[in-house]
Length: 139
Image (cartoon, rainbow, N blue to C red; front, side, top):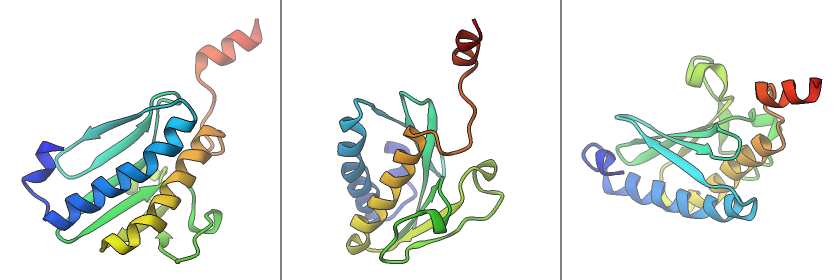
């Protein structure tokens, strides 16, 4: 998080922190942990249990973009925040983009991120089972 402080506005930092705090309870209910990797222009949130990124966050000046796994049609999105993500985003894994420009939008955005996490936990993201699991089932 320290790297991010150099290039984002205060509003973006507050939004990212608020999103992080709102998704942690859903993850801890599953006895999982979020591994956060901070790059120069993005933050990835990865499930430790599933070893898979479920959200990518880009903090920009005064707003935050969040990319998540499910497509806009697959989400329960009462506020209509989710838009189709560009195919180039996240090697084509992320299908929705959310723009959060105020703290008022944090709660509905966090619900969408939790849906991405829940989808990952239920393995509905099209990813194959880990090789070790497939080999063990074959024996």
